[in-house]
Image 1 (tube, rainbow, N blue to C red):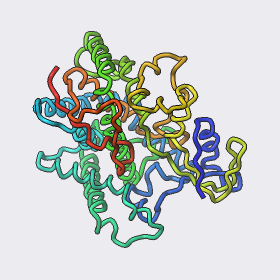
Image 2 (cartoon, rainbow, N blue to C red; image 1 turned 90 degrees about the vertical axis):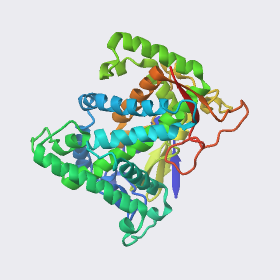
Image 3 (cartoon, rainbow, N blue to C red; image 1 turned 60 degrees about the vertical axis):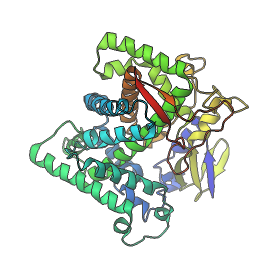
Image 4 (cartoon, one colour; image 1 turned 180 degrees about the vertical axis):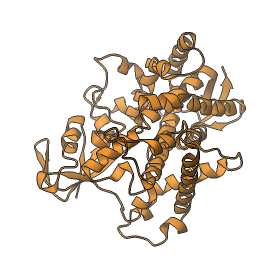
Amino acid sequence: PLVSVSGVEHVKTLLKHEFQPEDDRGIGTFLLGAKNFGDLFGQEGILYEPDAEKHALLRKLVGAAMTPAAIAEAIPSIQDAANVQIEELLKTQGEVTEMEKVFSDFTLDVAWKQVLGLDLEESEIPRFCRAVQEWTVGVMNPMFILPFRIPGLMTITKTGRARQYLVSKVEEKLAYLDEHGPDSSTLSKLYFARDEGDGKTKLTRTQVIHNALLLIFAGTETSASTLTCASLFLALHPEVFQKIREEQKDIVIQYGEDLSAECLESCVYLDSVIKETLRIKPLESGELRKVDGSVEVDGKQIPKGWFALFNIKQTHVNDPATYQEDGSHMDIREGFQPERWLDETTKPQAWMPFGAGRRRCIGERLGMTEMKVFLSMLARKVDYDLVNKIGPDDPFLWKTNTVLARPLDGVKVRARAM
């Protein structure tokens, strides 16, 4: 049996029991299709560690690569990747371009350049990008959630072979770090992280690989999807895009052309645009937990052995600060109002696109930084129009085989220089 739990307070009530032993009404992460799906991401990643102490240590060590200082160091590399894609976009002036591909290429560039710190030959970049895409497609493949192990799944499928290739690139980089020492890559920070308590405890090589794969997945899939939706929303609301441009003009005057942690912190309106995009189009469902001992939520018992899904989308829908009976608060035409984030009286109260509890997405800061950097540079340099004009009564069509919502047409545009 499965029960859906929504509402921030209800979700918090559920998740406070995480890692508690079975006889103390605990819940645990349920690894969907553990026999095969676990092989896809890696059983030793932070996402599915069931032991409280081990998870806390993993979070501390992986978190060393996600600190504000670590992300700040990565911003120049992320800005360079954004500029490369924007230059390519501007070469297409007058031609039809799919923004989904632009954002996917950007996040993939960040994945190999910054997250893994690879030095790929120009000829190998397409292979790397293709491998990430083929690997992430496996998340939606029902074969991987079968309750029994399929022999050779990691070698007989495109998804499995793509994962093997990605693991080989991580191992090559680790060999390089063994010989040359730390560098500015996120992988390096994972590899050389040490527990502050004893100064010695570190991630195993396998843990480094599995957690690096998780960061690649989160950074490419989540950021690319949200940026794609944002590009559609900005085309539908040109007055919002104009406000971003005006804010960026002030940012350039104050800080110059190069982005930094300090100037991104000053992008208050841009931050509200990204948050509003994630409010309307978050993860379509949520995360699954297995109830190891009966848990009470809102006066109702969730029996032992049941599964509980904490529902992110429904939590946003039911937010009392934004709720409208006709559902218009979740409509991309009527409900997209970044200004609501700038006033405490209208600010959403129930917002959890990165999850909640001790398993809240550890790559949140990296993802938000990627999105802020790209949209900052886009607003400074590019304007565009939708190719597929959408009338006020036309329905929006969305892809169904993605983790987060993406417009069916990939947001086709004609771009031009500012």
